[in-house]
Amino acid sequence: MTGGPEPISAVAREALERELADLRTEREAVAVTLRGGGGDQTGDRADQADELERATELDRLDRRIDDLDDRLREASAAGPPRTDAVGVGSTVTVRFEDGTESTVQIGEVAAVLDRTMVTADSPLGGALLGHRAGDTVTYVTPEGPATAVVLSLAD
Image (cartoon, rainbow, N blue to C red; front, side):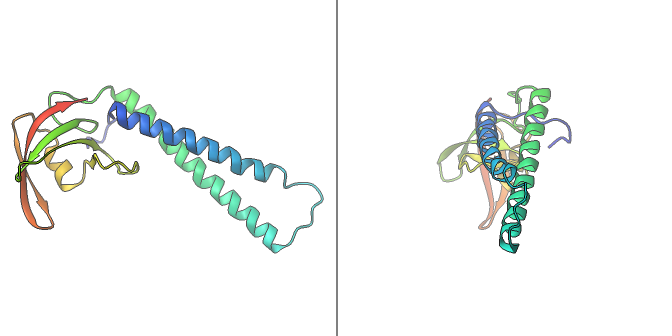
């Protein structure tokens, strides 16, 4: 990764936007449970503990929402993923040594549960960065060194 704004693919953007919408819905549901907690209710320790737990959950949701908002803003500033060489946000088709082919997306984090996502700091993802169609890359697997050929790039 470059340290500057990193692009994301359209599929990754859609997944982040979907997660953001889900988090905002969940946040509103948790916030509603805290709004009615004032007044002259005495409550016991269990009620207080429950309220503290909901407030903690609200804080967690707010942090994740802020992170996703920031990431989507950064991706907009970065522009579209590269199509001349593999970069974060690229969709890459590769052929492995055993002849199988796979299309993967190069992402910065694996927060989205997507079997086609390869993080830029993983062995394969790191090896692919900066390469073009036709290049052969070498990376390390638990079984030892492996190679793959970059067949094509798309955004």
